[in-house]
Image 1: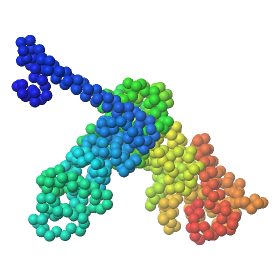
Image 2 (image 1 turned 90 degrees about the vertical axis):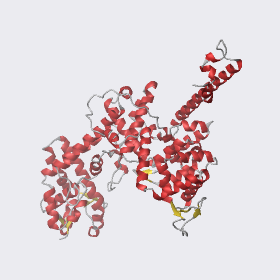
Image 3 (image 1 turned 45 degrees about the vertical axis):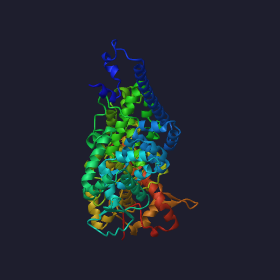
Image 4 (image 1 turned 60 degrees about the horizontal axis):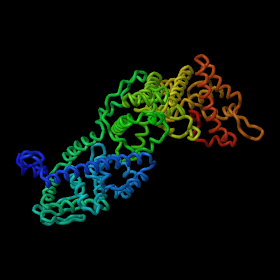
Amino acid sequence: MTRESNEQLGFPFEALMRDGAGASGALTTEESADAEALTTEAIEERDDADALRAQASALMTAASGLPSARRKLDLMLDTPNLELVAPLLPAEQLFFIMQEVGLSDALELLHVCSPEQFRCFVDLDAWDGDTFVPAKAVAWLRAAGTDTREDRFSLKLDALDIEVTERLLQADLRIWDLEETEDPEPEGEAFRSPEGKYVIEYRCEGVELLGMKRLVESLYARDAFQAARLMEAVRWELPSELEESAYRWRNARLADLGFPDMEEALSYFAYVDPKAALPAMRPPRLLEPVFALSRDVLQNRFLERALAEVTAEKHETVEGQLVALLNAVLVVDKVAPGDVDAVEAALERARDTLSLGLEQAASGDIHAGARILETSSLKRIFQVGVSLALKLRFRLDRLARNRRLFLPGSSEALWDEPWASIFRAVRRRRPRFVDCRDLAEVPLDSPALPERAFRTPADLAAAEREIACMEQLTDLMDTLGFSVDSMSRVLREAGLESEAPFLRFSTLYLTAVAREAAGLGFAFEPFPLTSLSELMAEVFEKRPDGTPVLRPGFTELLEGRLRRRAVDFSPAHVASAARFSALILERLRDELAEPWALGTLGELRAFPMLTVAG
């Protein structure tokens, strides 16, 4: 290698070829000073880079303790050297902050982000599944275009895939070739390109129009010839091919951020034996912790309490695994990263499931939970949580399969609340929990009770108790002579098939008892409204103050039949029968007592029984 070539690369030739500088091979004073200056500069640059990385790390730590995106943003904007620090922060973290506070309030932060971070923002927000959404990409371009420094905006624009740029132009521009159409008549705002070859018509309005103008103006300002070539490509490229190519590039980058493909993501939800020993953790790929979504982390789950006990040297490994897990959940749930509320909800469910699996594996011991986090795969712990809930679903699936619970024409099972909501929630593709302790705050005629992910072994135990109650009530209805086939025939013969979606076990049992009280015999058949007055005389009586109450004889008739059947099974069946009876009697009091006392029963259009005129 020649001296000149080395010097062109910035290396003092004598520093590499010492035999070329005098008999002793020593550097001259001037050359020594140059070499020392280069060495000092390199050390200073390295020290500066280390200092910036340390500042970025400290900023992440401080932000993780703040409860809102607004306070995280304020902290960043007050950070010295933000333009140098911001590019060192994980792009997805900045994305979630800006999405939550709104782009208009985060422009200062967006301006100092790197081109690669900007491209990541578009990757995360401008896609709906595998479909590109130009309007969302233009919103980011419009926001970035508010930067007064053209160099920063140009670099961001250059970072976008050429397929994305072309697809944006295709979506919002109509390009008239003046050689083909000498006198075009654009309907919207348009301008003639600088080289005189095209008339470019904008097919958008409002802020989207401003964003597209900024994009086109920047393209032509930098290189009119290249811009003209791009416009010609935009005219002829197939949108589907551009989108497919852009989607591949985008997915590859998301994979680098830790977002797995669908097959790998689904493996997190595979069933495993919850009682099997946890395998040792393989060395995971480390991913940056996502502090932007830390609001949910502040909850006091078993997971958070165990994480607080994890040793400092293991904390980074655990957090990296947690990010991978949460990313997999977003992929499986097909949650758009730009939908912050949906992201928060999905990640809360994921943490709940992970906490459930961890608490089960640790038998509720916080210290054991911390050791499990340090030595076992979070993926496997999550699978344990998933599997514990799946076992409940399998149990209800067997019940529905072996004891038919749906009348023809109805998509709803015959359960009353809260069992109807529990049945729906647990049988979802990923089972959910309905907290029956909250029922006092929810009307029983509500179309559905609130659901959430299973979070603790106590949730599992509560759901198991309700499922056992459903099984026991099904046993009792069977022994009383109810069957879906016979009920379907009764409805068909009575011309009441349209009632099927509204019938519940309480409705059917009360109907049969009402028939018995009216002297018509216990049967799962419609109650004739012509016998309603006789029935009410058996059901209600008035206190001296005029308040209607249930007659003890009718209460004993309704409760006694169920109780006698339940005794033949088990004490648990007796308890379930008592709950069911109490529910039916409450319906009677709520729906019929006052109309009976006021003499307005004839005005009711709906009864808590299956009725027929005549």
